[in-house]
Image (cartoon, rainbow over all chains, first blue to last red; front, top):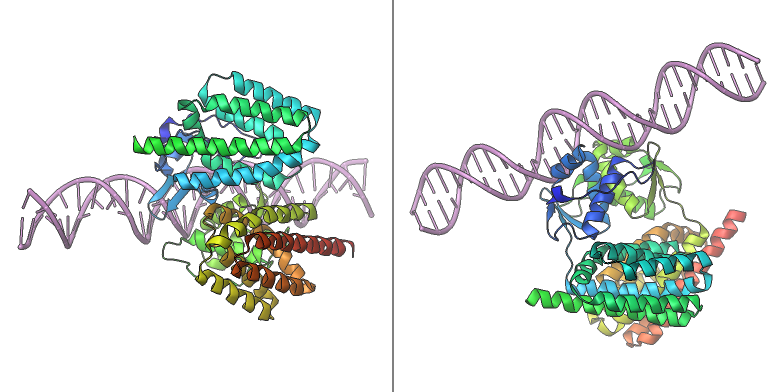
Length: 226
Length: 226
DNA sequence: CTATAGTATATTGGATCCAATTTAGTATAG
DNA sequence: CTATACTAAATTGGATCCAATATACTATAG
């Protein structure tokens, strides 16, 4: 139910419109898996939730649609997008391709501050016991690694790709032992970055994403059979 | 001026809303370079143009914003996005990375129909004398090459990347000798596809995109100096 | 003459209302 | 009892109106 959304979205900045706030809250709820896939999002219920009219809600939904997080059918409504295992597999393959390049560009350019930041997030991720926070820390870790790549467009695209699959990743991390491997992978990638070993970082990143994708696909196929 | 838009957008399908029609028309106008970069798009003028209210216009603009084709400032309006040479360069680099992979996947899987289609577009592109149509045929050619790749997400991303730079490519093709090389490149790529030589197709595609990008950057820098 | 304050206009953001369509429910024919 | 036609409720799409803000313009002080 949309009414269960725990909206943490405060004004991100002074220039945020109502539409922006709603967009962020809905995107967050979808990414975190707080809304079931296939669930229809009623304009009126979202509007009531925020005590606004449907206008900004509709604009937010258009943006979500453009990003592929919801699908819309005229006069019927928008539903939370759902992805087949093969679609998810494609996204992971794509992430491997692009994020490998990103880490290659970033390793040479990484500042000490970024390295420290990545280290902090890496440790926080390893120490975190609340599954709900793993996704955030995982994302923060990777974006700390990539931030000096000098490739804003790549980052934008990778963010979009991650957005589409994050809900599935979270569901899996909650229920499997994927965390253990993720921690080891992160440590190894971070180590390669500290040593400025771009080639190794690339290899490890590609393997990290590939393995995570394969584990997720196995998980989803098992669950769909069970 | 927005009033100069030659709207060719008829209903794409029976399920198209007014917002969809306006979105397509604006996207088309931006991509084709019919609107100057930095030009502000007034909701009211677009609405008048289509004889509708501002509501569907605003929804269309939100979608364009989500795709990076316009940028919006609260209470000021949306303007046609403009890209710096370095941003354009990044897009071309990105395209090279992703489209190389796409052609690799596609070459093995290409059906005779797709090969014929690509050949037709390639020839039409080479024979076309109207610069306004080069962009369309160029895009059709490449999408015919990629369509059997089995990678819908890659295609979606590549389309978005192309959308952002197409206006600049068109401006350059209109004014330089870039066409000649483009034709030769296309012939060579198509030949490699017919011979199922994936490796060669990859190399040629990467070079094709790289060269086009470099030529475009040179063109833009010259023009900004002149 | 220039700079600044203040006002009027234009434009965007949002709310409310109406129209178009779908969906749920009901009655009726077979 | 089932299937179909019809009606009512719910929902989305769009139009019109009002509020918030920015921009252009004017007047006035210096």
